[in-house]
Length: 135
Image (cartoon, rainbow, N blue to C red; front, top):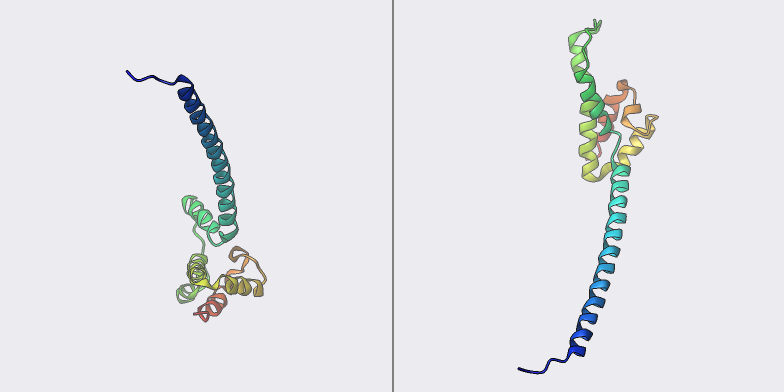
């Protein structure tokens, strides 16, 4: 049986322990950085999430609320020509994904608002006409 050098074994175990401590410190550092990155990602998503997405939640809530029957004095043909908030939102979202976000913001501002939800529905058709020219 070969001679075992206990001091070398103890020295090796000590080196392994030091390496494990260094690895665990690195893992802690990585987890802290991942946490910071995830917070930044959440902030970025919040910044880029337009108000166009938020009214969708309100629309769902309105659909679940009891509906009231309203008498409309406008002819049916007139109502068919009106563009809804959802239609405008869909068009703006498509143009935004196509890289026209800054142009869309300018158009909304030119109509007196930062967000689509602040726009008077009577201006929807004009906004859509301006946005569709973007390409």
